[in-house]
Image (cartoon, rainbow, N blue to C red):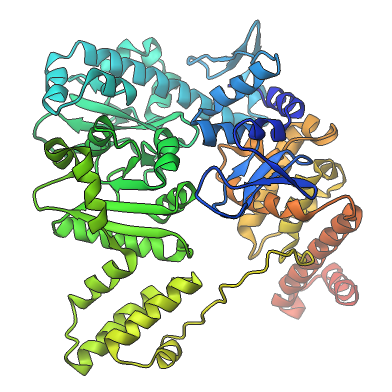
Length: 599
């Protein structure tokens, strides 16, 4: 665990412009620097680096973060490795801390922090770090077990895997037996350690209190999260058995519908190839890698989700979904297509490749090789073609009823698409197939096409919809305003629930780490939320402050946000009092209502 104070000091010494410029040549653009984004293909620069706030942002793909995040994205480093790399370049030494699995306490050098003290502000971070330590230790255990499991090694060789490939993916083996993890966790008999293993998804506890290893007699595939840390495991049976694949359960580290196998390791290959190949299984990814296709990823036993789509579109403009040609493969492709529609932008290409019956990527590339496999990409159906091909299988265009059904089935799909040119092309194709005039179709489907022309000029900054959003902007731009904030005003409830949660999390962080708020800040506060569920919204809000400069009146902005908060609370309180029967109000409440009405 790296102390936030060290990260703060490091980022205050590092100049993100120099860090990025070593890899991507930057050009001065007003107060900032710009370049073509290194994370997706583009012709016009949309990648911006702010020397004032020390963060980068791409208006094309949404990549965002500090110098640490840049190294993670660009070089495929883990968070810890990126911090170490920057620290070395600045002549700094990363402080080492370890986790005591007996107590969960953080120990640094000769100093230790008690559990009660840590809970004040870092309980969640500490728990996550404990889990990370457990996952790393388990991975080492499984890898060591593979070396001594002849039948598991024989199985992998039978599948064509080399030792080099197995080492690259850190493949291991979970031996048969019910409590093998005792060997790697001597503290297993202690209640606190057993609970940690349960929380990590490594052991299962039955209703009667019995505990046993989740993974037994399976090939183990470690799953890396977006920071390169091990967040979960996939376990495959060696021969026959159910389930064929067993994944880690949902844990504080692992959300199956959010993660993609091999995405972290494949990011550089995806950028270099200009595309990503989405397949169905771990072994497909591993086999493709061994044959030279290093830009493939796999969903973890789930349908492709909207989270997967958004992650992939941040990496590349070209996504190829590769599924088996059977009924299940077609169903999986349709789900992927449906979940993609809201996130399509003009210039992005999503296509669907179906392999011959009885083949999967693993078997096909083993038989025919890389060149032939990649040659199949020319046969991939573009999203628009796949969409109408599937719809047409269920209608008869020779009848009015069939054409009506086509329009009816297409309506909910087309309404999800916001990309203006793609919307136009889909409408034109539907008009051709249905025989209905395109303008009439637009009216019938109630589809409003958005103009594709977007001005790059910056308009005057609009006032945020909610005061919570407004305050988040101010605190991200100048955290010192936390010292002027009335916490009672943030206790409001209402329609802006997500923004209230994010604001409270930001306030809590700044309260626990006052040095971030009180010192002259040169780095982005969002850096400290790299593992937080609030990171995405914080990045979005912080991006908008790129337009701010020294001419902005922060005091007026802050006062305006507080006034709006006070107004929201006034109306909420009036509503509460009005909802009471008049004869139920106390004299004090009646007086309060009068004051609220005239204020």
